[in-house]
Image (cartoon, rainbow, N blue to C red):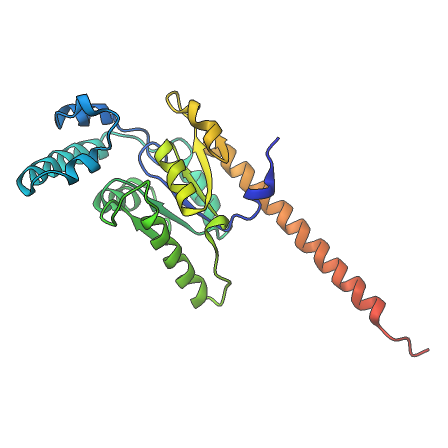
Length: 240
């Protein structure tokens, strides 16, 4: 049974891209192409950041070519469009925070999906430091709240945002940011499920959770309205 103490506060969602909205990318192959197979436990971007300018340029070209091939091969995650449609119908804001490039995130949003779903913000590794540093998520929060202020809505805090990803980096990013973490389970990450606030096996589960959450919130709002009406009735002065 899911404990809704955290998730019932959700007012917006941040998604990871690779392995989450898209099926997984073979990063072991990328390490092989970069000759970094002996450094499996060290972050690729962290290693490259220590290179000379010439070495960094060569490595970034390898990464760019790898991601360009991958984006045309990997598939949409099952039920991803059903989820995006549900979020739009229910006016739940969404954004993407990925270690991929902004170019590839935009390719997913504008080329891979069947229609132009609205994302409030798209953040790639160009905003440094990349995940698991929360800088990108903080920038998303800024854009969320700028939009809410324009619509005369209350601003939100990190603990009202659900961060959905498939890796320990996503969970760590969420923890560093202060949001609610949700792990999309696969055959390789189940051992990380205890580190996340919530875990799901597919996006249909997330739709069901959010739908129930919306129902609970609507019931609470109706109860509050009924209580206010009762209080108003009790406060009326009889003129008889």
